[in-house]
Image (cartoon, rainbow, N blue to C red; front, side):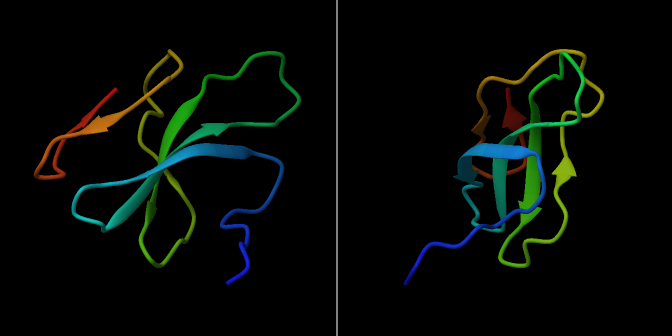
Length: 78
C-alpha cells in the first residue's frame, strides 16, 4: 500500500526501530518548538495502536543518538 504518516505536528521522529518482542515502536524525537536548542529524545509508541508517544528519556539532560534493546525487550541501552 501507499506510505502514510504515523505522527502529526511540527516535531520530527526518525530512526524508527521495533522492540524485539514487536509490541512497541521506538524513534528519535526532535522537538520543533522555536527554542534554539532541544535534546533529541527517545520515544515509544505502543504497537499497533500508535497513540501519543511516551518520552522514554525525559529525565536525561543529554541528547540520545542511538538505542539498542536486550533480547527480552526489558532493557533499552542508549
